[in-house]
Length: 421
Image (cartoon, rainbow, N blue to C red; front, side):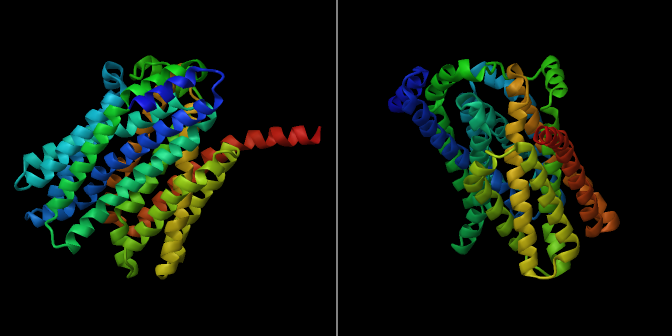
């Protein structure tokens, strides 16, 4: 720990250019590892339906547990700034890891499917809400403004990788003939390890925040207030905050009902998740560094257009596994990289004093979209079927594209005027 702390402290020196570059990189690598480990428990939520079924429950019982997690996630996001201000953001992430660890142990040991399982769902939501919100806020304070979008992308790629590992662990325990509860024990161990990493990073991160405070000019206060809410919503950061909610709705709607879509087409739904996750994770980890160096308004327009294209493909062109995979990859690239671009815009277009609050609202908007829209989509499917869901989701994607294009258009006009003069 002392090595990292000393390196972080050296960023305050204006002459040590190499140290300024290396110190955040070392801390950030550990930060992403901790994020990966804390994301694995969230990935195990995809296995809750199987766990509930194995204990004699049904989809309604699983829905109650997931609903408890949704409510506590939203509450945790709203209150995360208060927790961060009280004890420090890295320590809050360590507490988030303990929440996640406790929830996974609870899922493994609590008998039946009653109130005890719902309490575990509440713990899961508390842990995930804290981590999902405070992670980007910390990153915004330890890197320069021009590097935020890339670092946000790498962090979100690490998180999505962890989420993808959760179901894979479940599959591995099945192949080994272990009980499904073993998956939750393993996820509890990873979240505990992640909590220890963030506790260890507390001092190095604090030193980096102090060293970069003069450059970043980000307020140390993270809590959300009515005054900060008004400031953010009056700023241009409002647009990426709206866009991430719409994008989250698209992702939540399509991923939640892929089993029904694939069944209607006579396909294997795992093809979707393989294609989507591979493209989204690969894009965020390996391509985002190139994308975020381009004009963010142009890239947001192109990438949201890819999301529109993918939904059109799901609606009209999927006839076999290859076209199904291609549609999923298109969605993964468009959605995965759009998130990275607009995450950076949310921070860079917010007032300097309100950047943490803008990122908090960004997280809240995403969670409302990704978890709220499937509730409406389920009713739409019951009433009118999968085609109606795809049509409604296409409308949402077109609105997202229209916002991106409307933001790009005046900049294109300005560029055209400058060229012709």
